[in-house]
Amino acid sequence: MTIYYKENTGLKTPQDHNLDYFIIVKAGNDYKLSECFAEIIFYQFLEDAQTNKPANAQRTCQWSPSIDCTSVMIAELFSFDSITTTAMDEITLQNPTEQPNE
Image (cartoon, rainbow, N blue to C red; front, side):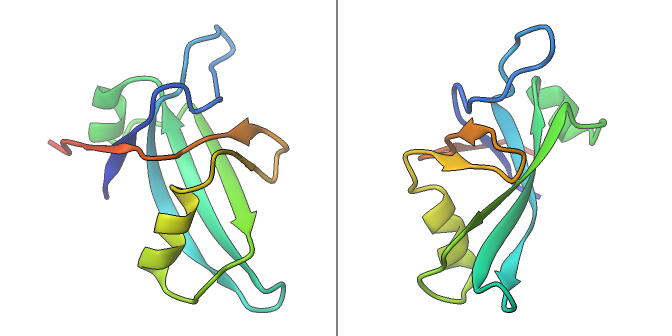
């Protein structure tokens, strides 16, 4: 799985530390609702993501698709200035960088 980094995604730990590393664990299209979705897990530390430790947070995003293609869906997700998760958190994943997955 690809690990991404985005400074200040908008999610924080209860101790107020940023959760800037994330992995998209599932992306797809809900044909019944005509929406794309992505399930994303967030980490405070790159090492935790690399070693598959329990995530600090998990969120789901939904949006109206422009096309039914996973790579296009992910590109759309990374193009939004911000997006509201199903838990009503406002986050941004715009232009993340890929991190080494050692």
